[in-house]
Length: 308
Image (cartoon, rainbow, N blue to C red; front, side, top):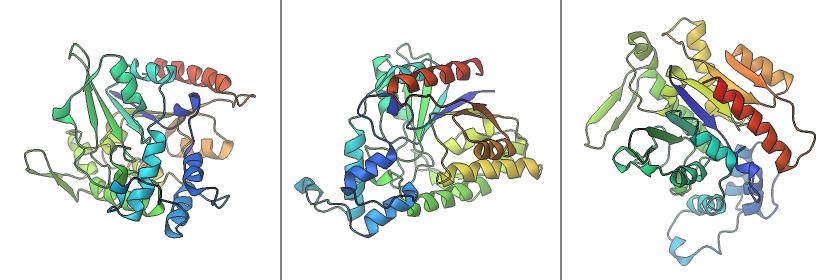
C-alpha cells in the first residue's frame, strides 16, 4: 500500500524567525486578541470586530473585500518562511503524496533545490475558496518520479483560499461531507463534468481514482507529523471520525493505517487509539530551544521512514 505524509507547521518552527498560527494572528491584530479561545474563533473575532488594520496595504488592494485584505496580510507573513533540514528529509522520503495544512511553499522550495520541476499540466488550482482538489505536482529532474502536494487549508499565492476562520472550516466540512456521500461533482480541465461516487461504493468496488486528498485517508497509509491535531482542527477530526464510523458499521473495505507521531497527553492518545490511529508517542524536550526540538523531529522522522 502506498504512503502519504501529512505535515503541519511544526517543521517551520525549526527555522529561525518562524511563527505559529497564533503568532500570525497576533501579528496582524496588534495584540487585540482574546486569550484562551481557538484560533478559528480568534480569527472570526478579529475580522468581524474590525480589529485588524488594513489601511497600510498597497493601493492596488483597494478594490478587494475586507476579508481578502486580512488573508493577504497572513499570506505576506508566511512568504518569508525558510526551508531547513527537516524539509530536505521529507523530500527524500520518496512518498508519492504530501498533505499539508500550511499556506507557505517551503516544501516546494526544498523540492526545487533538489531539482524537482513543476508539472503544470497536472496542477489544479481551479478552486477559488476551498481546497478539496487543490494540488501541486512536481516531477524529478529525470522525470522518472512524481510527487503531489495537497495544500488542504489553502495557499499564500491565493489569499482567499487561506482557511483560518470558523466559517471557512465549517464550509469545508460541508464540501468534505458531500464528497464522501457521493454528491460532489466538478469540471475537469477539458470542462467535462466529473461526478464522484460515494466513498463507501468506491471502497467496495476497490476502484478509487484520486480526485482529492480526502481519498488518501482511505486508500494510503497516512503518516501525520509536525501537526498538533488540536481539537479545533475540525475537518481532520471529522474525517478520522467518519473513517472510524465506516469501520464500525462495516462499510467499505478499509485496509489502510493512519499513524500519528508527536507529543501527546493521555486523553489525546486514548482518543486517537479509539479512532484506530496508530500513536507514536514522544516526550517533549526539556529545553524549548530550536536545537532540542530539531533533535526530537529527527527521531520522529527516522521512525516514520522505518514505518514506510
